[in-house]
Image 1 (cartoon, rainbow, N blue to C red):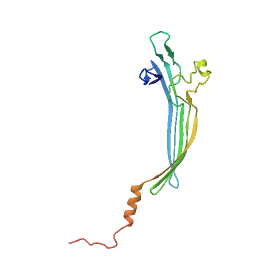
Image 2: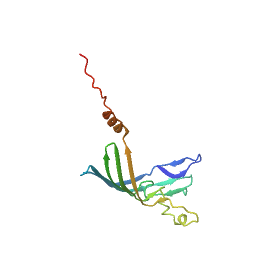
Image 3: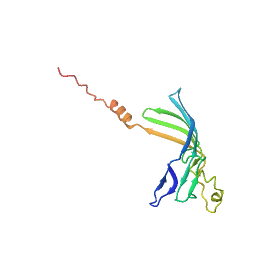
Length: 163
């Protein structure tokens, strides 16, 4: 797990929490509707916590950061998406919304235990706020298009089998 620091070579420090908790629920549904429409939806909500995590970054007993109780970095709190789609021969079209919950970009949970850091001049939040976006997809299957073209270009002269 990326621990939120850089070592002397400029590489991310990796570390493991002594205990963590990951729990949640997921769903997925897919329906075929009249008119060759397809409706799909999926979602997940999770609680990902560092139950016991002390990051030691130096030899002194004071060289420790306590991330215990914080959300695990890079795990969104929820994901939801829905899509309606349809194929038109070799063309596929789909559209739908996607929602992503808050994501903390390091294990400090946006320095929630360190108000002095959050209120310091120039502080940049360590989180991505929830957002929703619309997705659209158009896909053309050239193999199907070319196969269809082969069927229409039949030889006008019928060849009889040789006996």
